[in-house]
Image (tube, rainbow, N blue to C red; front, top):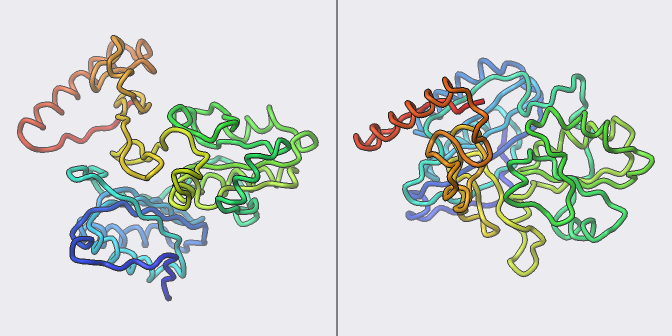
Length: 319
């Protein structure tokens, strides 16, 4: 199999030594996800990569951080199993590992949606940044941000409708309750990297919506392709690694993240009386039981002790 990388990557000595983030996904039949998981885990550990790769019978979805040379070597491993994967690269600030560890897991879905027998190859029409701007300016188009509300809170396209979901599996019910194919004749949607729109647009087409569009490559591709004076994006974009967010120039943003509820936190949030490092924030204060709060405080204590020892403490966030 031959790997077709959609953008040419030329490596200088400096670039080879730098650390970056590589994201990719594809809906494609995977005959033996468990066997592939073992091979990719071995390759990822050998290359000292960190991040998460999800495998399912329906495809692959991954975000990895590491040295450029090692990520490029992992691409070659992926080429043994997939004809083509679209890749996106972004930068890591010095000292930010991106992730604590490498997790390659087999799941029922590579993005959890909960709709069985969905044809993920019958999706909406993919549009580039130029066509997306036309859709944003068309009053007859309903623009939908398919991400969860905690992501929408820190940035979105002006005028976009938020389903106010806390989990992507809530999206189908929101469509049933709020949209009508007869009334919403033209629908355009977007998400972080494009993968959620593959399922969301397929679902809407199956539900009878005739004219459905999706932003090709998601917000991250859009920000890569638009200049500062041309962008319609407002705010920052939430990302699922230790950067928490990226700004319109795809540089690490100004947000941190609440360990308890995972909501991104601004400087004002962290100055609030409801903020306690590692325990609570204005978005979740008062929602935890006494036992949960005690566990969070103990975990934060261990984090501080690990920092003093010069090591990392890895724990699970609250659900």
